[in-house]
Length: 202
Image (cartoon, rainbow, N blue to C red; front, side):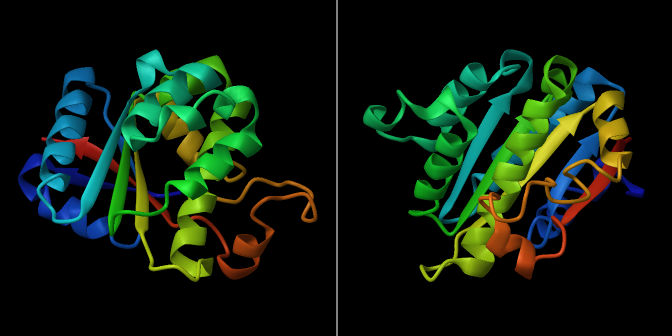
């Protein structure tokens, strides 16, 4: 994956336009710049009518239970749906699918996403694949009114190295057995997840 660069003066409008068609990976070596970018992007997205923004604090989401606790709160789901959610990945997928209603657009901003990469690479891959897969279902497969869902990953060098991995889920769907894959239909329609990566400068 190639990396483009955008400066602080060129956004937020240019970034928001990119999200019409892509998930986004944003990289910076400066923690403060990453935090400011994620916070400002979220503030701007929330001003768009019929838009829902979920922010994940990656430093506090390094395993499945801690990630799902934040996602449950962000998705505003009833408590009754929460208990079994983080027991397995299929439950996560089903809850993400059930949340694909109520808005025209949903953006998930995952701050410090490389914290989970440091903790559990396999889990990160599966979560990324699940979020991309459900987003593609909502957009290309579902018969219900389309909800545009995009994920913004914000991090440093480790996230950048993952973005360059051609076998990672920023570049390809998870290589499950086709018959057992929960996203076999998506994989037959969408060749690869639509992801672009940018370095934050200025």
